[in-house]
Image (cartoon, rainbow, N blue to C red; front, side, top):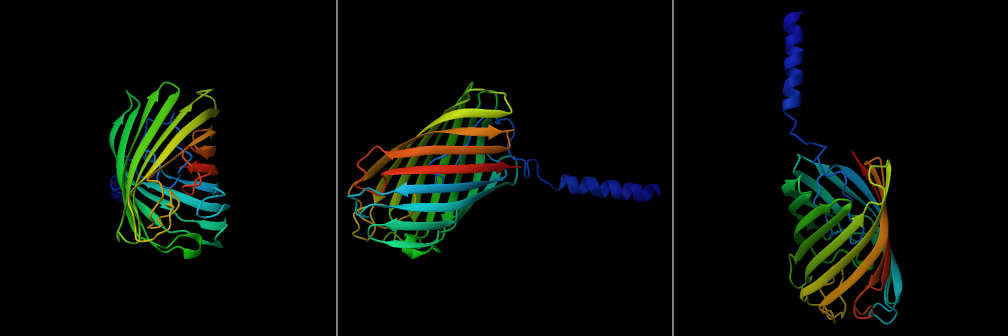
Amino acid sequence: MAPAIALVLSGGLLAQSSTPDGFLTGLPGFDGFHEPVGQPIYFESPFNDTGLRFIYLRHEFGEDSALQGGDLSVYAIQARLALTERLGLIATKDGYSELDAGIAEDEGWNDLAAGLKYVFVADTERDLVVTGGFRYQADNGTKGVLQGGVQELSPFVSAAKGYGDLHVLGSATLRLPLDDGDGNTVGHWDFHADYDLNPGASTVFAPVVEVHGVHYLEDGDSPLPVGGLDYTNLGSTPAEDFVAWAGVGFRVEFSQKYELGFVYEFALTDPDEDIMDQRVTVDFHVRW
């Protein structure tokens, strides 16, 4: 009996030792932070965990823009898987869109995008995290909802810093089309700040302020005079090289496992020169 027990125990220890530290559980020590809400595809937080994020987004176009007004609704689910404490797999774009613009009306599937991220700095004493990564986006989506036009690679870096109950997050992303004619080269930067009003409670409420910027760095072959912002890549010739918008809202976190977010977003630059007028984004995180 003793050899059999020893064999079972050694087998269990071997199985445990074959699982990397942080598999599924991810990076510990930063539970007080919240995820960004707006710009959900390219504003990747620096934290590494496992979970699902359910997203609803309603976007309105300027009445005098090239799309002639109208709106866009997006329904999507993002997934993240912690492979180790610092390495994570991210699936950040998918879902279904309903487009009802002045010049087009259709519905269909969005492009798929996934990648990896790695935490380079994790300093719990200074409440500081810095992460880098990349995504690959396929061109599988429905063209009638302005998807399926170009494949992209998008390297990014993101960081977070805590100042007591105030949390600040930022990221920078470069979107590189695999075919320069099909897509624009686009740079993104994003900023998020939140403040816990009741830290330590089982349900934490935090007001949120965000600012986002998009730079069209290189044009594509299409003469369309607006860019695709964060929703798509039109390979166009935008009238303006820079578009910015802001958002105000909140996060509500339940038991550090579930998190509800809401932001109302509005253009800081001329809404008729691109596709950004106003937007509402709602999400719900479930973490393991």
